[in-house]
Length: 132
Image (cartoon, rainbow, N blue to C red; front, side, top):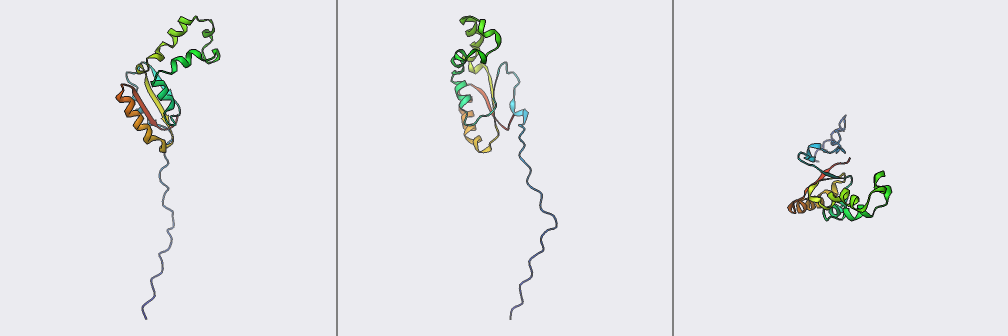
């Protein structure tokens, strides 16, 4: 008869180390804020809805129609022209550096596509892999 098979090797005394945890803190060098006079920060990209609305210039009308509690105290006493001047930069979204943070790795691939599309349209935008 054939010899019996060798016994299985003993289990290791120590388990292998777990893989390194993904850091929730973004690499701040990815922000690339040098030369940015204005910055729009989105604290949770999700599918890029807020960045898209901002790039399309929809934040100006939203700001103008928002209730006074959403603005600084002086807003209530400002005339329409002063309010429009105060919110005027929102009409020029390309004058902002846009930085949007997303902590869910599964959402990053479509955001990278959106980033490339917006950059091709002249926006300084970055979707940052990480959480605030």
